[in-house]
Amino acid sequence: MLDRRMNTYGEALSGLFHGATILLGGFGGAGVALGLIRAVLDSGARDLVVVSNNAGSSEDDLALLLRNGRVAKVICSFPRSKTNTVFAELHRQGKVALELVPQGTLIERIRCAGAGLGGFYTPTSAGTQIGANKESRMLNRREHVLELPLGGDFALLRALRADRHGNLVYNKSARNFQPMMATAAKITVAEVDELVDVGQLDPEAIVTPGIFVNRIVTRGSPW
Image 1 (cartoon, rainbow, N blue to C red):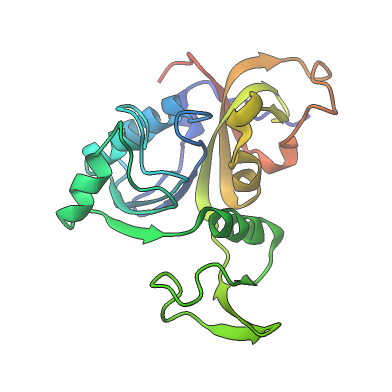
Image 2: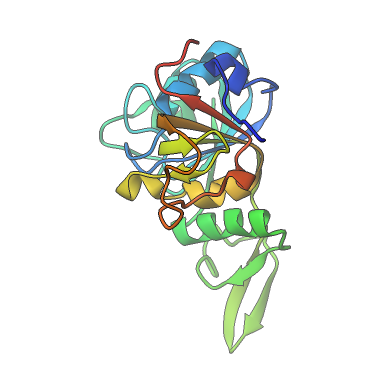
């Protein structure tokens, strides 16, 4: 029987390396794996590329890694936040690179990586700086830009419940980008609030099947 439970946060992030690309779930403060973010900091990994909806909205989310100089590049849709200015300050100083991606394009690039597709054409960024120097073509008399898949070495997710097989249930809007990110990483790690026995999760409520999850760690586990 498959058992994806890890005893510690450190074990859950085993193999994380310098320069890794991390898909970080969350939308603002909803569904952010704060324990796993701290574990990334403790791991010592640096020069990371982080793919996220936003570039931090509190002191203990992505901003924690940015503030400690662990991130080389952020790929996101919303780099600015009223509640956290760490990324904006570092970017202005030339210390962190930014790839700005429209939100719909971001999630579709992640979905393509998970589905094994070669990319897709979208009119969203045609004629803008975001679409500059990218391949484009006319489709239905409208310019479309080719966007490539966006996968990661690790996906760090936050779920409400899981069983030992890694089946995940999310808490309402905390679901956000996480189901797609789970499919698009080489190693998917989920931080969960509650671990239940196999069979206790309603199959109709399972959003991310365990086949996409490699490791789970329960909030409150040792570091």
